Length: 89
Image (cartoon, rainbow, N blue to C red; front, side, top):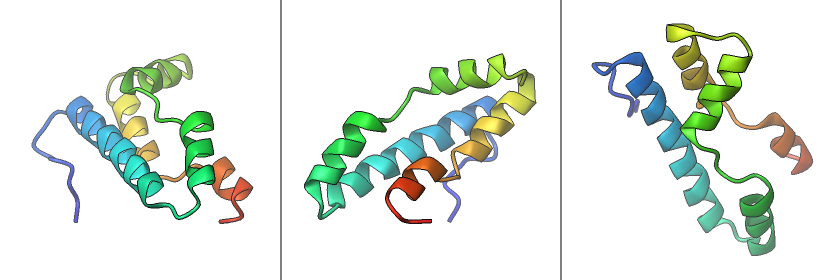
């Protein structure tokens, strides 16, 4: 089920996707059996703000719709580095 409201502006959709990603990451960590690992992830791979990603992708040359499309896209992917370090990939 897609929880992104497609009737909103692209920026608002990107903000929704970012917020949902952070919400689900936080929920997943609360449900982790390995509490030490959950705490480690909270400290070392914490949720970043929407503005962080806006600035990150602006510096990479993304503008206007492409900027928010990039944030939407990245909000649907897991972190490959974290997955690899946890032996998930």
